[in-house]
Image (tube, rainbow, N blue to C red; front, side, top):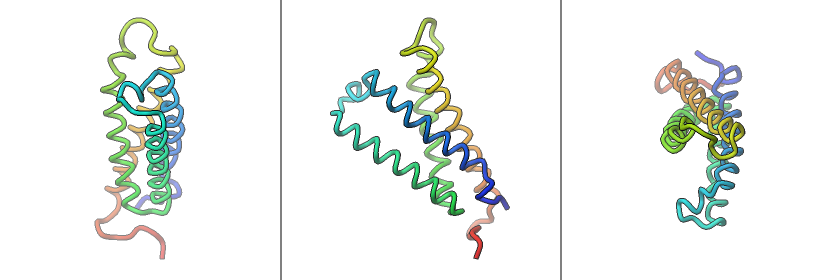
Length: 137
């Protein structure tokens, strides 16, 4: 059984939160809210809700809760798929993309950290017997 205190999911999750915040700022600078016909205030509220949800899932995972790990696995997979589909072709196209290496680094960092978070969360879930609470009593 994996120990939540030594689980790579938590480290990947912290990196994911950092890259998410920085990539969101990059998205805002390049007009993503307008692309989706969202007002700035609506986008800010959605961003806050997203960040609170991710941090909440990390807290639950750090406490050894299956729901936290399941949420991180699903959330990481969804964000990975969304970012690859939205930015993958643009990043691979010839010529600069957005702000060059900084924007590319943020997008790739988000993709990699979401992949690592999902895989490690799934590994943690597989290591836990179904129905058993892994938290110490």
